[in-house]
Image 1 (cartoon, rainbow, N blue to C red):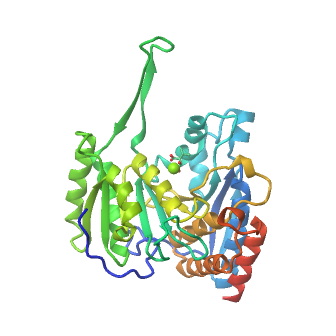
Image 2 (image 1 turned 90 degrees about the vertical axis):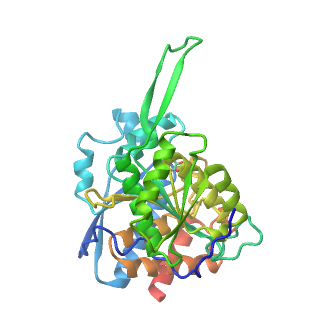
Image 3 (image 1 turned 90 degrees about the horizontal axis):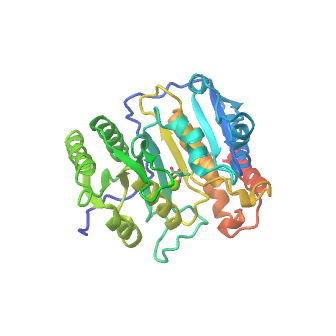
Amino acid sequence: MAPIAMRPVNEPAAFPDGYAVRPERKNTYKIAQIGADGIGPEVINAGVQVVHAVAKKVGMFKVDFTELDWSSDRYKKSGSYVPADYLDILKQHDAIFFGAVGAPDVPDHISLWGLRLAICQPYMYANVRRTKVLPGTTSPLSNLKPGDLDWCIIRENSEGEYAGHGGRSHRGLEHEIGTEVTIFTRTGIRRIARYAFQVAQSRPRKHLTYVTKSNAMRNGMVLWDEVIKEVAKEFPDVTMDSMLVDAMTVRMTLDPQSLDTILATNLHADILSDLAAALAGSIGIAPTANIDPSRTMPSMFEPIHGSAFDITGMGISNPVGTFWTACEMLDWLGEHEASKILMKAVEQTCADGIKTRDLGGKADTQEVTDAVIERIRAL
Ligand code: IPM
Ligand code: MG
């Protein structure tokens, strides 16, 4: 892999300030709160506390959370994760603050399509996953210093391998068939590529790496490459390179400093973002933003981790992923100052060693939450 000249790392903006559609600053933001399953409600409850604290600190806006019971429990009682008019309900909000979905007694593909994809797939075509090594967390890569790994993964969120096309026939017979058809559209690729370039442009290094597998997948992935290269011409100030997805795992592990903004398909980015979270030290800290760049629908913000039924109700889940998620949400709403204060308070808390067990600490969820609130007040 060829070395790339990189500009020095500064504090990158979470979301580009030059969005096509800028946020509308409000006195009160209405947020749909969906804790959903497992530890989801616990971490979202912690997140709500810190958002109120940081709003109070900034003193310019309030946040009004509406709790929605959309979850596997609702599904088991009523046969549906969401009411029929769920998109209309969501539309009345400025953002969605989401915990985790998945229950041991519901097949994963039912819960995923019933709730998370039902909400995100129609409009939120950009999934943004930032990764960095936070103070107080240790990367398994022994030579990595904080700042060496600072990535923003842009995941195509509405088509590709998750398009939902396919079927099964000849059920139970020896020659049973199951197909899962990957769909790429010019429109879908162009819009995600534009968004990824905007994000890359907003970060100091102005560099985008796009991930592909067009050596083996000779149709959709070749279209993917072609459209991304076309879009690149609109962003002459952003440098670009490409990686085959298999080689990308090697580069992420052996040469993490060479990467900044990463664009990948739905499935490739799903896999690479777990690797990214692990390399940064913990899956418990990473945020996800499901963005509708057109702002037609509210965007949805969730920690990257799952519902973790094994520790549900024990009060020990790590709320940091949700706090960082809340920072992303505040940024998307245009409340950059609040976002920065919250992130600083989280970093200070981690640096002071107030961490949950998954990060090698002793604190429980509420202790970490209280520590962050204390630091917000003191900042
Ligand atoms: C993620 C998750 C989901 C996905 C799972 C729960 C289906 O891994 O958000 O990355 O693959 O999209
Ligand atoms: Mg995943």
